[in-house]
Amino acid sequence: MKKLAILCALALSLSGCSAAPSKKTYSIGVAVYDGSDTFISSICDTLSSEAEKDGIHVSITDAGRSQLNENDQVNDLIDDGADILCINLVDRSATSTIINAAMDKNIPVIFFNREPVQSDLTRWEKLYYVGADAEESGRLQGQIAANWLATHPEADRNQDGIIQYYILEGEPGHQDTIIRSETAVSTLDEAGISLEKAGYAICDWQRDEAYDKTSQLIKDGTYIELLLCNNDEMAAGAVQAYDDAGISMDMRPAIAGIDGTKEGISLVNSGKIIGTVYNNYKDQAEKIYQLADALMNNKSLQDLNLQDGHSYYSSYQKITPDNVSSFLGQ
Ligand code: BGC
Image (cartoon, rainbow, N blue to C red; front, side, top):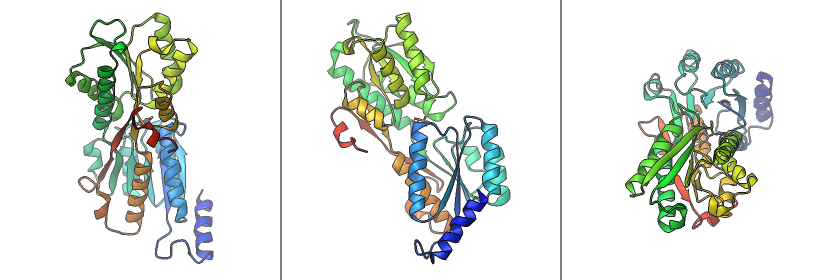
């Protein structure tokens, strides 16, 4: 990896650095919790292509959901010459090893998507966070569901005036899991919808787990009118389970997702889910790169819209049948 970084740097200097004459060449080390996560891959792909345009080298490691692996991989990235680290933690409460290693070598760290607690983020002035506001995503998902229920009285299939809902949740401990679930439900409640919780299942953001869980719910005959999913991957797993069980649309719960992945958008478009909430991966990836670039080139961070000078929260947007056409082809 070190050789690769040196080769990249050499290639740039041999070409007369024509790509970015006034900029310093540096190397970005990215560590992700799970390289197969659809949303995280979108961020990494955009970040890499943005950096590539400037001839900046990006190395990406995949922790396979183990914090111990990630700690080792971050040490390797540092040994291989990373000048800045972009970290998608496995366990957002386990920052100390990585922060200590970075502080030791004076390497700035941009955490992304999995938010460290504030007391960790304020340990050193070269720590940053790029993500999105979990509460906003839960609120928008709740609004999508409330609006759907208000305009589709048939969604209350047993006509008892109460909506039986079930939640497919991401990993426990992830800020987006806890806050999205709570806020979606409180938003529905505030909109005056009578609710009854039919249950919840932890599906770790994963489609396969959601597929298995939903298939089990169908087998058990669990009665559900609204299925809130913490992300689109899990919504897609649930849709697949209903499809495979041959259950017609009028006998399924209304399903809502979050992320606005390609597949999520296409499920809204085909009417299989009632909506999703766009988690702007492009904006987040671009912000990570702009921040890295500013830090590496000693530029001002003034224009980056950072909260408290250290954190950036991208805005979410609702995607429903009304506006889905403007998201197709994203
Ligand atoms: C996304 C999920 C993703 C998770 C990974 C969340 O913000 O909505 O799709 O799996 O981050 O940390």
